[in-house]
Amino acid sequence: MTQRSPRPKRKGYIRALLLILFVWGLISGIRSLLHSPYFEKKPPTIHLPQEIYWNLKSPLKIPIEDASGLKSLEVHLSDGSKELEISPKHFHPGIKNYTLDLTFPKLGLNKEVGLLKLTLKATDKSHWNFFTGNSAKRQAIIHIDEKKPELFPLISSYGIRKGGAALAIFKAKDENLKDLYIQTNFGKRFKPVPFHKKGYYAVLVAWPMTQKHFFAKIVATDKAGNESVSRLSFFLKNKKYRTSTIEAKDRFINGKISDLAEDRPKQTANLTPAQKLDFVNATYRKENNSVIRKITSKVDQNLLNDFKLDPFYPLKNAKVVASFGDHRFYKYHGKIISEAYHLGLDLASTRQADILSSNKGVVVFANYNGIYGNNLIIYHGLGLYSLYGHCSTLLVQEGDIVRPWQVVAKSGATGLALGDHLHFSILIQGIFVRPAEWMDSKWMQTNITDVIENAKKMIDRTR
Image 1 (spheres, helix red, strand yellow):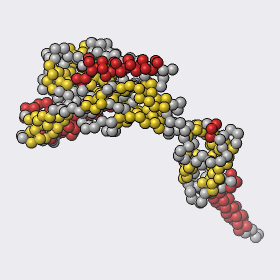
Image 2: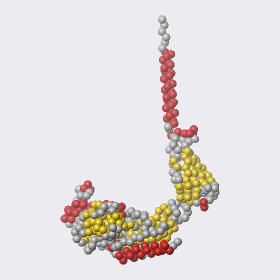
Image 3: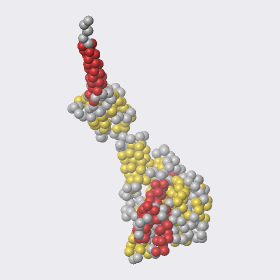
Image 4: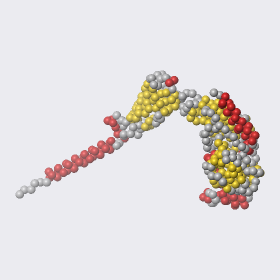
């Protein structure tokens, strides 16, 4: 009996296997192709906000991007009655990022209507959507604003002394006001607060005692980029501050300086006595002052109607033992090692004497702060802060509202202090100023109270 050959059956298996492999390869190839950049599915990204303010002076810059490359861009502008198509843009291969510089057309649209509608449609080079590519469409409302903010200085303190402060009140008005600040020649920007009625502002400015010159101007900008500038005029009064040289003894370095250096053991472990002195007096002092400046740079934006303060008198029957602005050079073994400015007034009376907050305020800091020891800071409004250092005990905590003449702490010798006393400072938006001005009732009346009252009368007379 003759047996049949198995070859045809094997050939069928092979054909079927080859067909399966072919179909699998075809599917894999199609899948890979569809997932390749040629069939990228993500539409272009148009960075266009829904609302824009435009002064027409400079082009609107609108970034557009796409992973597979841009193919075309359509731009339409409408003023409500007419629509204008800006020349369409066709891109060369490979361009993935483009910034549209849109200028207002010279003919065809009426800018006096104040509003435009902008429509953008971007298409990429992808072969997705049956080779038509991906498209993105965005629209925005454009507010045309060519008018500068209204800006007018109203009244101010007559003068400002080097190291001191002054008050200015002015008018600033714009429907689309974006930013308002006082720019100084030394880089500091003072933020004004709303005053008395809408459109009026008050600001305390400071002339740092380390700056030789002082210049300040009001700057107002709106959402469209229009800017108005007006100079603040003050009679400038120079003042010389004391310079002194202090011989640091080993007892001082091995005592207070070493104790404070232990606050930063990793940085001071291998330092010589002279290096520890410089670290504490310069590096650590700078760190502590940075904490203070950060806290005292904040300004509330509540409407200010009155700013009546009593002269600051934080320590009764106290003697001044160190003045504000002293430029101190520290010597060790006859060599100048470090220098620093004394940014407050040192007052001494009896040990652990009552420290008073002469005026109402909010406690914004009550903690240990390096060379200042136990440190208390109180905010009194209009960017004005009072600071109390070297305290033995703090009797209030952050967030407390203190009343006038409340005992808030006890004097002491914490931090970089050799004896029991109070280090008292006044700051305006992060700038240390002369405490003597804020302890002088006549200065406060002339430069603060009278200016505010006269400004209110001037504002109330206007309609």
